[in-house]
Image 1 (cartoon, rainbow, N blue to C red):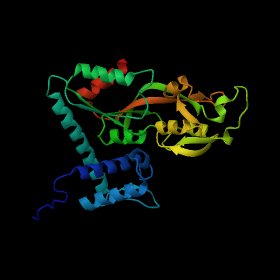
Image 2: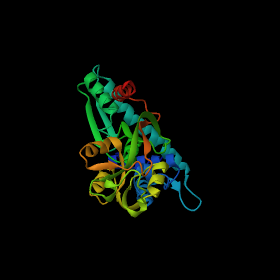
Image 3: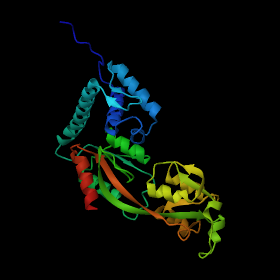
Image 4: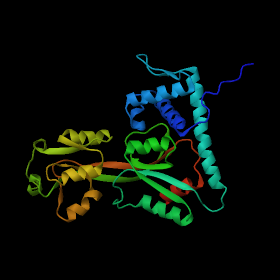
Length: 302
Protein backbone atom coordinates (compact mmCIF):
# COMPACT_ATOMS: atom_id res chain seq x y z
CA UNK A 1 0.00 0.00 0.00
CA UNK A 2 1.39 3.40 -0.95
CA UNK A 3 2.09 5.87 1.82
CA UNK A 4 -0.39 8.74 2.03
CA UNK A 5 1.14 11.96 0.75
CA UNK A 6 1.61 14.68 3.38
CA UNK A 7 0.61 17.79 1.42
CA UNK A 8 0.48 20.51 4.07
CA UNK A 9 2.94 19.25 6.68
CA UNK A 10 2.57 21.54 9.69
CA UNK A 11 -0.38 23.94 9.39
CA UNK A 12 0.96 27.49 9.62
CA UNK A 13 -0.74 30.76 10.49
CA UNK A 14 -0.68 31.53 6.76
CA UNK A 15 -2.59 28.33 6.00
CA UNK A 16 -5.21 29.21 8.61
CA UNK A 17 -5.52 32.70 7.14
CA UNK A 18 -6.11 31.25 3.65
CA UNK A 19 -8.66 28.81 5.05
CA UNK A 20 -10.52 31.68 6.75
CA UNK A 21 -10.64 33.57 3.42
CA UNK A 22 -11.97 30.41 1.78
CA UNK A 23 -14.61 29.93 4.49
CA UNK A 24 -15.78 33.55 4.10
CA UNK A 25 -16.07 33.13 0.30
CA UNK A 26 -18.19 30.01 0.83
CA UNK A 27 -20.32 31.78 3.47
CA UNK A 28 -20.96 34.70 1.08
CA UNK A 29 -21.51 32.51 -1.98
CA UNK A 30 -18.78 33.91 -4.18
CA UNK A 31 -15.77 36.21 -4.59
CA UNK A 32 -17.68 39.43 -5.26
CA UNK A 33 -20.01 39.05 -2.28
CA UNK A 34 -17.00 38.34 -0.03
CA UNK A 35 -15.23 41.61 -0.88
CA UNK A 36 -16.97 43.65 1.86
CA UNK A 37 -16.59 41.26 4.81
CA UNK A 38 -13.00 40.45 3.80
CA UNK A 39 -12.12 44.09 3.11
CA UNK A 40 -10.13 43.18 -0.02
CA UNK A 41 -10.84 43.20 -3.75
CA UNK A 42 -11.87 40.29 -5.93
CA UNK A 43 -8.42 39.98 -7.49
CA UNK A 44 -6.79 39.64 -4.06
CA UNK A 45 -9.37 37.04 -3.05
CA UNK A 46 -8.60 35.12 -6.25
CA UNK A 47 -4.86 35.15 -5.41
CA UNK A 48 -5.55 33.83 -1.89
CA UNK A 49 -7.75 31.06 -3.26
CA UNK A 50 -5.13 30.07 -5.85
CA UNK A 51 -2.47 30.02 -3.10
CA UNK A 52 -4.65 27.73 -0.97
CA UNK A 53 -5.39 25.37 -3.85
CA UNK A 54 -1.70 25.22 -4.69
CA UNK A 55 -0.73 24.50 -1.07
CA UNK A 56 -3.19 21.64 -0.61
CA UNK A 57 -3.04 20.35 -4.19
CA UNK A 58 -6.82 20.40 -4.73
CA UNK A 59 -9.28 22.39 -6.82
CA UNK A 60 -11.75 23.81 -4.32
CA UNK A 61 -14.21 25.68 -6.50
CA UNK A 62 -15.26 26.51 -10.03
CA UNK A 63 -15.56 30.17 -10.92
CA UNK A 64 -16.54 31.70 -14.18
CA UNK A 65 -19.53 32.90 -16.15
CA UNK A 66 -21.67 30.12 -14.71
CA UNK A 67 -21.00 31.44 -11.19
CA UNK A 68 -19.29 30.14 -8.08
CA UNK A 69 -19.59 26.47 -7.12
CA UNK A 70 -17.68 24.22 -4.73
CA UNK A 71 -16.11 21.00 -5.94
CA UNK A 72 -16.56 17.82 -3.92
CA UNK A 73 -13.08 18.36 -2.51
CA UNK A 74 -14.00 21.97 -1.76
CA UNK A 75 -16.99 20.91 0.32
CA UNK A 76 -14.83 18.51 2.31
CA UNK A 77 -12.10 21.12 2.88
CA UNK A 78 -14.74 23.67 3.95
CA UNK A 79 -16.19 21.19 6.45
CA UNK A 80 -12.73 20.39 7.81
CA UNK A 81 -11.86 24.12 8.02
CA UNK A 82 -14.96 24.85 10.12
CA UNK A 83 -14.00 22.00 12.44
CA UNK A 84 -10.50 23.46 12.71
CA UNK A 85 -11.79 26.95 13.58
CA UNK A 86 -14.16 25.52 16.17
CA UNK A 87 -11.35 23.44 17.67
CA UNK A 88 -9.06 26.49 17.92
CA UNK A 89 -11.74 28.49 19.69
CA UNK A 90 -12.63 25.59 21.98
CA UNK A 91 -8.96 25.09 22.87
CA UNK A 92 -8.46 28.72 23.86
CA UNK A 93 -11.71 28.93 25.78
CA UNK A 94 -11.12 25.56 27.41
CA UNK A 95 -7.72 26.62 28.71
CA UNK A 96 -9.26 29.80 30.14
CA UNK A 97 -11.99 27.76 31.80
CA UNK A 98 -9.40 25.63 33.64
CA UNK A 99 -8.84 28.55 35.98
CA UNK A 100 -11.26 29.12 38.82
CA UNK A 101 -10.61 32.85 38.60
CA UNK A 102 -11.71 34.62 35.43
CA UNK A 103 -8.63 34.85 33.22
CA UNK A 104 -7.83 35.09 29.55
CA UNK A 105 -8.12 37.76 26.89
CA UNK A 106 -10.86 39.76 25.23
CA UNK A 107 -10.06 40.92 21.70
CA UNK A 108 -12.53 43.63 20.76
CA UNK A 109 -12.74 45.70 17.58
CA UNK A 110 -14.43 49.10 17.72
CA UNK A 111 -15.18 51.58 14.96
CA UNK A 112 -13.84 55.11 15.44
CA UNK A 113 -15.16 57.98 17.55
CA UNK A 114 -17.60 56.29 19.92
CA UNK A 115 -15.92 57.43 23.12
CA UNK A 116 -18.01 60.62 23.30
CA UNK A 117 -21.32 58.74 23.08
CA UNK A 118 -23.51 59.76 26.04
CA UNK A 119 -24.41 56.09 26.59
CA UNK A 120 -21.12 54.57 27.75
CA UNK A 121 -22.30 50.97 27.47
CA UNK A 122 -19.07 49.59 26.04
CA UNK A 123 -16.91 51.42 28.60
CA UNK A 124 -19.17 50.31 31.45
CA UNK A 125 -19.13 46.68 30.26
CA UNK A 126 -15.32 46.71 30.03
CA UNK A 127 -15.14 48.15 33.56
CA UNK A 128 -17.44 45.37 34.85
CA UNK A 129 -15.29 42.76 33.13
CA UNK A 130 -12.07 44.12 34.63
CA UNK A 131 -13.59 44.28 38.12
CA UNK A 132 -14.76 40.66 37.92
CA UNK A 133 -11.46 39.44 36.42
CA UNK A 134 -8.49 41.66 37.32
CA UNK A 135 -6.15 39.37 35.38
CA UNK A 136 -8.18 39.54 32.16
CA UNK A 137 -6.20 41.18 29.35
CA UNK A 138 -8.28 43.49 27.14
CA UNK A 139 -7.04 44.20 23.60
CA UNK A 140 -8.86 46.95 21.67
CA UNK A 141 -8.42 47.50 17.93
CA UNK A 142 -9.82 50.73 16.47
CA UNK A 143 -10.57 49.71 12.87
CA UNK A 144 -13.15 50.32 10.09
CA UNK A 145 -16.49 48.45 10.29
CA UNK A 146 -15.69 45.98 7.50
CA UNK A 147 -12.46 44.98 9.26
CA UNK A 148 -14.38 44.57 12.52
CA UNK A 149 -16.77 42.12 10.84
CA UNK A 150 -13.93 40.21 9.16
CA UNK A 151 -12.01 39.99 12.43
CA UNK A 152 -15.01 38.51 14.23
CA UNK A 153 -15.68 36.09 11.37
CA UNK A 154 -12.13 34.76 11.18
CA UNK A 155 -11.66 34.57 14.96
CA UNK A 156 -9.07 37.33 15.41
CA UNK A 157 -11.68 39.29 17.38
CA UNK A 158 -14.04 37.96 20.03
CA UNK A 159 -16.54 40.79 19.55
CA UNK A 160 -16.92 43.93 17.48
CA UNK A 161 -18.81 47.18 17.99
CA UNK A 162 -19.87 48.76 14.72
CA UNK A 163 -22.73 50.49 12.88
CA UNK A 164 -25.54 48.29 11.62
CA UNK A 165 -25.50 48.37 7.82
CA UNK A 166 -26.51 44.94 6.54
CA UNK A 167 -26.50 41.61 8.40
CA UNK A 168 -23.87 38.98 7.60
CA UNK A 169 -25.01 35.37 7.86
CA UNK A 170 -22.10 34.28 10.03
CA UNK A 171 -22.65 36.88 12.78
CA UNK A 172 -25.03 37.45 15.69
CA UNK A 173 -25.87 41.01 16.70
CA UNK A 174 -26.73 42.68 20.02
CA UNK A 175 -28.35 46.11 19.72
CA UNK A 176 -26.53 48.82 21.70
CA UNK A 177 -27.72 52.34 20.90
CA UNK A 178 -28.74 54.91 18.29
CA UNK A 179 -26.45 57.67 17.10
CA UNK A 180 -27.81 60.90 15.55
CA UNK A 181 -25.84 62.64 12.79
CA UNK A 182 -26.44 66.03 11.17
CA UNK A 183 -24.89 68.24 8.52
CA UNK A 184 -22.19 70.62 9.82
CA UNK A 185 -19.99 73.46 8.62
CA UNK A 186 -17.05 75.28 10.24
CA UNK A 187 -17.01 78.86 11.53
CA UNK A 188 -15.01 80.00 8.47
CA UNK A 189 -17.52 78.52 6.00
CA UNK A 190 -19.99 80.87 4.21
CA UNK A 191 -22.99 78.94 5.59
CA UNK A 192 -21.94 79.49 9.21
CA UNK A 193 -23.42 82.99 9.26
CA UNK A 194 -26.49 82.19 7.14
CA UNK A 195 -29.90 82.94 8.66
CA UNK A 196 -32.05 79.97 9.61
CA UNK A 197 -34.78 81.12 7.25
CA UNK A 198 -32.39 81.65 4.35
CA UNK A 199 -32.72 79.19 1.46
CA UNK A 200 -29.46 77.69 0.27
CA UNK A 201 -28.47 75.45 -2.61
CA UNK A 202 -26.23 72.90 -0.91
CA UNK A 203 -24.94 71.72 -4.28
CA UNK A 204 -23.15 75.07 -4.57
CA UNK A 205 -20.78 74.07 -1.74
CA UNK A 206 -18.07 71.41 -1.62
CA UNK A 207 -18.83 68.48 0.66
CA UNK A 208 -16.84 65.59 2.12
CA UNK A 209 -18.34 62.10 1.78
CA UNK A 210 -17.36 58.82 3.48
CA UNK A 211 -15.35 56.27 1.52
CA UNK A 212 -16.29 53.59 4.06
CA UNK A 213 -19.45 51.48 3.82
CA UNK A 214 -22.69 53.23 4.85
CA UNK A 215 -26.38 52.40 4.77
CA UNK A 216 -28.69 53.25 1.90
CA UNK A 217 -30.26 56.06 3.95
CA UNK A 218 -26.88 57.71 4.45
CA UNK A 219 -26.03 57.38 0.74
CA UNK A 220 -29.32 59.12 -0.03
CA UNK A 221 -28.36 62.05 2.20
CA UNK A 222 -25.05 62.48 0.37
CA UNK A 223 -26.81 62.36 -3.00
CA UNK A 224 -28.00 65.90 -2.29
CA UNK A 225 -24.46 67.20 -1.72
CA UNK A 226 -21.58 68.11 -4.03
CA UNK A 227 -19.06 65.58 -2.73
CA UNK A 228 -15.61 66.69 -3.93
CA UNK A 229 -13.61 65.00 -1.16
CA UNK A 230 -13.76 61.74 0.76
CA UNK A 231 -12.52 60.36 4.08
CA UNK A 232 -11.90 56.81 5.28
CA UNK A 233 -13.34 57.46 8.75
CA UNK A 234 -15.37 60.02 10.66
CA UNK A 235 -12.34 61.75 12.13
CA UNK A 236 -11.20 62.38 8.57
CA UNK A 237 -14.62 63.90 7.78
CA UNK A 238 -14.22 66.20 10.80
CA UNK A 239 -10.73 67.24 9.69
CA UNK A 240 -12.03 68.41 6.31
CA UNK A 241 -15.12 70.14 7.70
CA UNK A 242 -12.93 72.09 10.12
CA UNK A 243 -10.90 73.49 7.19
CA UNK A 244 -13.92 75.66 6.41
CA UNK A 245 -13.87 74.42 2.83
CA UNK A 246 -16.38 71.59 3.14
CA UNK A 247 -19.72 70.66 4.65
CA UNK A 248 -20.42 67.12 5.83
CA UNK A 249 -22.30 64.88 8.23
CA UNK A 250 -20.97 64.21 11.74
CA UNK A 251 -22.45 62.47 14.79
CA UNK A 252 -23.87 65.12 17.12
CA UNK A 253 -21.95 63.77 20.13
CA UNK A 254 -18.70 64.00 18.16
CA UNK A 255 -19.37 67.54 16.91
CA UNK A 256 -20.60 68.90 20.27
CA UNK A 257 -17.18 70.01 21.69
CA UNK A 258 -16.47 72.07 18.54
CA UNK A 259 -20.02 73.45 18.55
CA UNK A 260 -19.55 74.55 22.18
CA UNK A 261 -16.34 76.39 21.19
CA UNK A 262 -18.07 78.10 18.26
CA UNK A 263 -16.01 76.24 15.66
CA UNK A 264 -18.86 74.20 14.13
CA UNK A 265 -22.52 74.84 13.39
CA UNK A 266 -25.29 72.38 12.69
CA UNK A 267 -27.04 72.80 9.34
CA UNK A 268 -29.96 70.58 10.30
CA UNK A 269 -32.33 73.31 9.09
CA UNK A 270 -30.95 72.85 5.55
CA UNK A 271 -30.78 69.06 5.35
CA UNK A 272 -32.36 66.26 7.40
CA UNK A 273 -30.02 64.20 9.54
CA UNK A 274 -30.09 60.45 10.09
CA UNK A 275 -29.84 57.86 12.86
CA UNK A 276 -27.30 55.04 12.91
CA UNK A 277 -27.84 51.89 14.97
CA UNK A 278 -24.77 50.45 16.68
CA UNK A 279 -24.47 46.78 17.54
CA UNK A 280 -22.09 44.30 19.14
CA UNK A 281 -21.27 41.46 16.72
CA UNK A 282 -20.14 37.95 17.65
CA UNK A 283 -19.56 34.89 15.48
CA UNK A 284 -22.69 32.80 15.00
CA UNK A 285 -22.57 29.32 16.46
CA UNK A 286 -19.53 30.01 18.61
CA UNK A 287 -19.83 28.92 22.24
CA UNK A 288 -18.58 32.02 24.09
CA UNK A 289 -15.90 31.52 26.72
CA UNK A 290 -16.27 32.95 30.19
CA UNK A 291 -14.47 36.19 29.35
CA UNK A 292 -16.62 36.97 26.31
CA UNK A 293 -19.81 35.89 28.07
CA UNK A 294 -19.02 38.16 31.03
CA UNK A 295 -18.45 41.11 28.68
CA UNK A 296 -21.70 40.45 26.78
CA UNK A 297 -23.55 40.18 30.07
CA UNK A 298 -22.11 43.56 31.01
CA UNK A 299 -23.36 45.07 27.75
CA UNK A 300 -26.86 43.75 28.40
CA UNK A 301 -26.80 45.01 31.99
CA UNK A 302 -25.66 48.46 30.90
